[in-house]
Image (cartoon, rainbow, N blue to C red):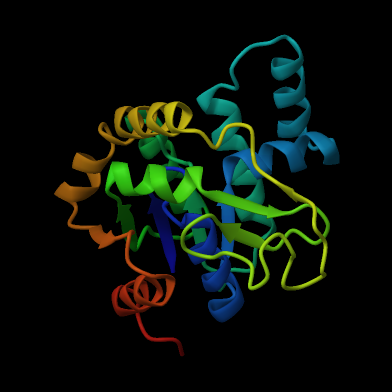
Length: 217
């Protein structure tokens, strides 16, 4: 099972990918994480990426595709892949087809978590976490049981991401729409796209994804 998981930052891709990894043994291929890991490992693609980033330039499609190719080569044939953040352009989509074919794989589903922009802004702007243990909270939806005290570790120190503000979130949304617009028609034409309400609660989103994927063996 090889799927592309689409959705803007805050749509819940990471949460759902984590569940698929735990329950189905799939592997999340997040380009950002892979770039950092490849640079740290000193792999051939990682060394190329490091040189480009140190020069202050954008990592090319060829390097990102090489990272995907490299990672798939380390995975067992029966391990499914979750592509997160790739492909973002029509050329990347074409490259992914070639890479999958080279590894004897096919793309099974493209799942887009659809969101309401205003609701997503509220979801992201209100989130924060315990500075000690990392437990996540929200100003409206998930406050600590005792105000100002972490439910898990009892710490009274909390933190928010600097980029969790309305302006940044709306910019990310615009970037997401611009980047995904070119590839969705490609997969729509192949009848691979499924759209899910990403604003539903986590369990409902997970159930909707499970309904799309084939039953576990």
